[in-house]
Length: 184
Image 1 (spheres, helix red, strand yellow):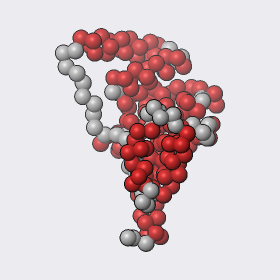
Image 2 (tube, rainbow, N blue to C red; image 1 turned 90 degrees about the horizontal axis):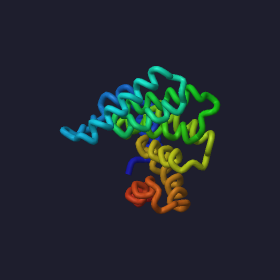
Image 3 (cartoon, rainbow, N blue to C red; image 1 turned 135 degrees about the vertical axis):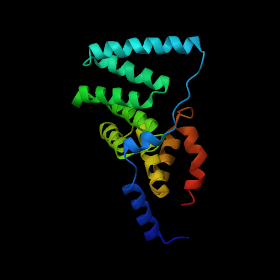
């Protein structure tokens, strides 16, 4: 029932005062580690070897890619984000939209689901390289929701729903909330 101008101003205030990536990471829930799990312990030992290999050869793109993937698999979300950021920096102009989208994903996960300015930058870079990339567009819509602008999120997400595929990981969360977005 609030006037639209006030809602837009409030949304801008929310957007302008998002926490930094470091603040969001500090307040994000920490993943639980399984205890007394031999398989998990073996996986950790293998990732330790991968960390050592990347330390020995920090300019190996494949090593950084694997490290980011496996740190994410272990729930070491900040370490995963850092490895992916190093990969993107190493690749420079050769970094693909997929590389940037992975960085966006890991940045958002490390921040506990919040899209910070750092996450937004990765989303923008991914969408600049591939404006049709569905995962980056999903995050662009999520940023609008988090910033109090469901009116901007709705068309982005409605288009993603129309494009499918129905088993894409972003379809289920969009279906869950898009009905509510239609009311704004």
